[in-house]
Length: 539
Image (cartoon, rainbow, N blue to C red):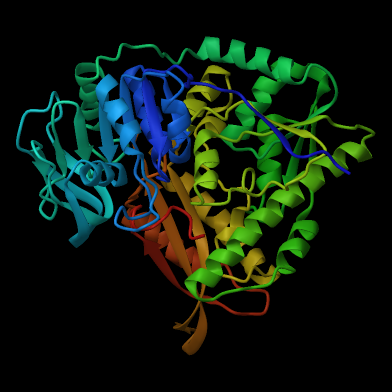
């Protein structure tokens, strides 16, 4: 029997005795609270709400306790909560800040009232500050809530409001509740808000810096410690995460490291050749496994087309891709006469949290099989995407790799509406190649481009006119998003493509691509929805 899955993650930016404790109630932006604290210069400790009693009883005394957002309603009978005694203890020893769900929970626990919002708010709103709050001056903020605080606990003050949310920021001397999300990229002055809470109100002192040289030194030493001997495999996708993991693992393992690039068949045309051009062939195997991946995915039962069915189906797709990757790496090693003891992955902090909070089953986290014959080693598990890009530049990787846009492991498989088929995949591979050519033509500098962009295939039967004939075909959807400096993808805005780019895209995608069965593409749409309420990827 194979041993149970083992995962080793390099810890960074956290500490069990941190001045700031973050209590996780299920929010997908919880990692961004920790990230914003790092920018301020503070380590943090993140725990699940169910672990609060044990932590509170341990003698650990944080200066600031942050209750995160969550996807439940505090009005529900079995919603996650915090015991009165634990909340009282946290309030006695420092400052307590609630964000969104955490804000509503604080208000309810301390005598206020929460009810379904008359006008729920999602996305960007304007915050007006009524009372001075350090350097925080309001402005654009991201809301994402169904409920609202309708009555305040005794002695609380209204500090800021929005058009539809009177109690957007409220509090008293040692307890504060904010309904918007100061931690996400598209909230203005979120750092000033959290800095005032942590440094001025809670009295925290800086204890964290992101020193690139120190990170490399410590990560390499850690890699050597967790895998002191034996062959080590690495999955090289060509993206910045796996490229940085490869560069670190090279330093740690030398000739013991064997990298494999797997062409899953769900990449744009020419992807393998492009990656080979970046990284060469020394110590790297390039494996074409399109048929294997396609066979596994097309065998999955399709549970769509309604939204719930599509969601279930694409969770299966992600897991199937994760299993195929592992099998391919292990098989490649065995064919070369190796018995690997470890698989290095470029998994980042956002991947881990999104999977653990059930936002998305990332193929390299939620998609990993329950039992593995190797240890999974993740040297970037404590970093966010923008930090990894800084590390990539420091390590001297090519600029096209440093600023390469994120691409999900399942690739084009999650950029079509189900079920995944060979016909759709072949057309989407060609269309995506054209989109990439146009992006590079119209936006030659990598930093001018959208933070992430892609083409999706929508089997939306639509009428067109080609050669004076009525033609029924499908549609393309172009998606481009922008992020702020922290590149968290917890929130994104729509990228505004130039008219010239859109004209070229519409012409080439309808003229140059058709399904192998002759079905044409007669329309090109551009998605302009932000996140929330949308997500970056369609699935």
